[in-house]
Length: 278
Ligand SMILES: NC(=O)c1ccc[n+]([C@@H]2O[C@H](COP(=O)([O-])OP(=O)(O)OC[C@H]3O[C@@H](n4cnc5c(N)ncnc54)[C@H](OP(=O)(O)O)[C@@H]3O)[C@@H](O)[C@H]2O)c1
Image 1 (cartoon, protein in one colour):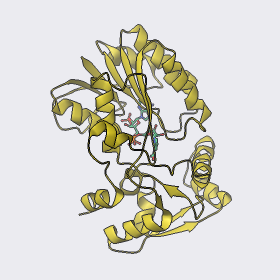
Image 2 (cartoon, protein in one colour):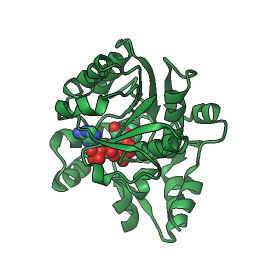
Image 3 (cartoon, protein in one colour):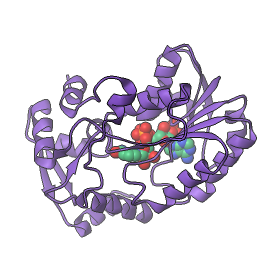
Image 4 (tube, helix red, strand yellow):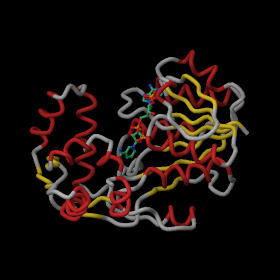
C-alpha cells in the first residue's frame, strides 16, 4: 500500500504522515512546496497543487490510499476536489479518506457536493467531519488574538465549541486508511467537552499566564477587520458563515467517536494547552 497524504505541511496531514511513517508504511507527503514538509520519519515528498492538475499525475503514481482535505475556503471545489477524485479513481487508487468539517450536513453546500461526489465515485471512502481545531489558538488564525489578550469575534456570547486536537483527527484518519472497519462511514469528530467562550478564555489565560478575553463584535466590525487584513471577499463571507454557524450551535455537540475508534479519550483543551505552551 502506498499512502498519499495531502496537506502534509498542515496540522492534520503532518501528524498523519508521521503516524503512518512511524508504522513503517510507504507514505508520500504532498505539498505545493515540499521544502516545507517537516515530518519525522522516512517518507517520499511530492509536489501537489489542487490548482495545477498536471501535478496530480505524478502525485497519484502508484498510490492506493489517499488522505484528502479541501484547501481552506476553496471557492470552486467543482474545479479541484471533484476532478481530483475522478483522477484518483482513474489512476487506480482504491480508497480516499476525506476530512471536511463538522456541521457540513447542514451548511457549507459547496463541500457537500464534494462529499457526495466521493460517495458516488465507486472508490472506498470514509468521511470525517471534525469540529473546531485547538490548533487555531496556538498556530492558526486566532493565535495572534490570543497573544494580544483579546479574541474579538462575532460568535455570540452563548455559543459553545467542542474543540478537537488535530492529532486525534489524524489518528482516526490513520485507522480509516489502514483498516476496513470505517469504510463507507461518515463521522463527526469532536474533543471531549463543549466549552463556552468564558471557559475557553479561562483555560487560555491560565495556560498563557495572562488575561485572554473574548469580546463579541458585530459581523460588520469583523468583516471590516478581515478585509483590511487582506482576506479576499469570498473568504471573508465564508468566515462570517462559520461565525453564524457558531451562534446557531452548529459546532457545540460532543461525539464519542474519537474514543470509540482510538480506544482512549480524545485530548482536551486544557491538556493540549499545557503541552503546547511550556
Ligand atoms: N481550523 C479549523 O478549526 C477547521 C475545522 C474544521 C475543518 N477545517 C478544515 O481543515 C482543513 C485544514 O486542515 P489543517 O489544519 O490540517 O491544514 P492547515 O494547517 O490549515 O494547512 C493547510 C494545508 O492545505 C494545503 N493546501 C492549501 N492550498 C493547497 C492547494 N492549492 N493544493 C494542495 N494543498 C493545499 C497546504 O499545503 P501547502 O501550503 O504546503 O501546499 C497545507 O498543508 C481545511 O480544509 C479547513 O477548512 C478546519
